[in-house]
Image (cartoon, rainbow over the protein chains, first blue to last red):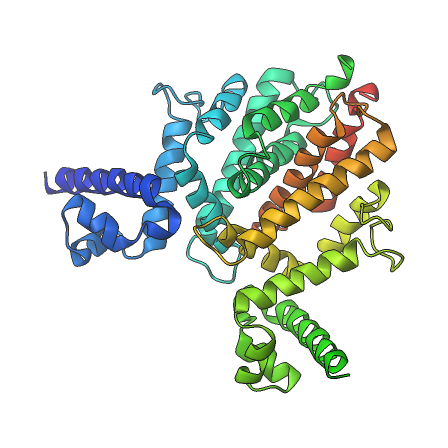
Length: 196
Length: 196
């Protein structure tokens, strides 16, 4: 019972954090701002999330769960793999939520520095995401894509393009149409040369 | 004369910063550590670079100048455009210098946050790099690549793949072969399906 209440509170904090991120961006999403939104003292919030990084990692984990979310309308199947035709929609959806994309991108940038608290999360996440993408591509195309790559090697590029496009788009949204560019890449994977 | 000496000192500081980055990484590359290396007080260093971000941006600008460097063995032509066949070598070279790649990636991550001092540098850099890559692709393939994309749209993806691969590689160098993956992408641009 106490555990259920604690879980509920945790979910409430994550929702509040997502709101604050959407409104104020990565830098504005301080522990103090989130605590205030959810009606806790900062000390009370620290009981659930000891650092800003821990809170943001939890927000990103939650987003991944929703985006792949079994049966909840996300882009994922029940095995946690993304469905390929919905990946484009996911990128379109991301283009409408710059706050969370900015948070993801900023924290990913920090995570490659020495002993950063989010490094383990991202390393583990990419191992999982590459495997899930490879499974998705294999289900769609078998052991070699129309473009000639194995699903595993194509998965590395698929993830790289999604991340790389986000930086260009966040810096200059007028210059970079993220969903269009991602569609271009899916075309390349499918061997767009056939059409050319 | 005073100006020449000042320029020389500046170049010396940038070389020292690059060494400190290579040895200690992004976090270890403090203004204090760079000042010590070059035999200046921290106050003396601030005369040349008022913040860590300003110093790191100057280091990255310098790297871009060398990598595209007209006639100095870089991947660039005299117009500042990269030569396509040397881009793969540039990625191989980057795989041997994780310190500077980490610095680039960490600062790029920070730059997408509100009012970050490196935001203008990166926004401007990407505008230039996309244009240079498009010029390179057009020189090689004309107005449509074998894979069917225009040089401008392919350039967005080329840059995204380079950046995105760096994050995956920095987090997990055993799992991601950055030069191989980049070669895979160049193959896709060339319409690898023909070979498949």
